[in-house]
Length: 266
Image 1: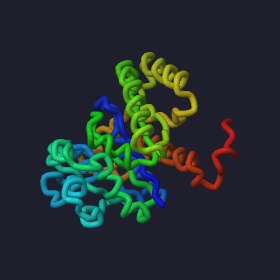
Image 2: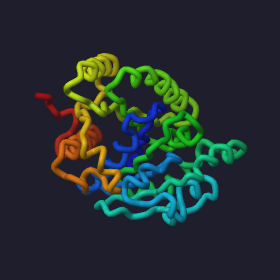
Image 3: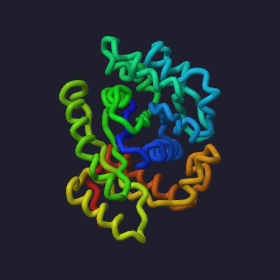
C-alpha cells in the first residue's frame, strides 16, 4: 500500500516543485517505486523530469474531468523507479468544470485509489493556491509536506495554510496527517535565514525536519536540462540534501532498519 504525500504551500516560489521532483528521484534511487502527480497548471514538475508539457497527450486533467484510467496517463521518466502523471495548461479550467460536479473534492482520490498499491510513494505537487485542485490533493493524501522558504514572508502564510489543512481534516479527510515542514533555500551567510529557522523550530518543534535544503546553484540549473538533481549532479550539496531528506522521511515512517522510536539524536 503506497503512501500519498501532498506537497503544498499557497505561497509561490518556496520550492514545492523542486522538492517534489528531487524527493521523488531520491526515493527512486533508494529503490522505492515512486509516482509524481503534477497537479499544477504551470506543469513545472512535468518539464523538470524531462517531458515537454506541450506534447503531452493525456494529463491529470483527463483523470479529473474525463475519469480516464491513470494507468493510461502515467509516463515513465529517465530516473530509476520514477513515473509521473503529467500536467497540462488545460488544468486551469478544471476548477471551473468541477464546480457543479457531485463529489468534486474526491475526484483525485478516486483516481489515485486505483493505483495506490502499484507504488511505495505517490507525491502530489500542488499549485501555489488553496483552490479546488489543491483541496482534491489534500483529500487524496495520507499526509501533507510543507516546504517553507527561509525568508520572513514565508512565515506569514503558514497560519492560513494550517487552517485550511484543519478544515480538510474536519470535513473531507479525517485521516490526513502532517508529514512535516521542510526548510528550503537556506543560505548560511544570512542572519535572517538563521532567525527564520529558529522561529519555525520554536513554533513547530517536532514537525520540522532536521534536514535543511540549502540554496544551491546546481539545484537551480537542473530543471533547465530537464533533469532531477540526482541525474544532473549526484555529488553536489543539493543531491546530498534531498537524499538525506528522503532517508529522514523513510526513518519517520519506520521504513528503515532502525525504528524511529529507537533513533537517538547525537
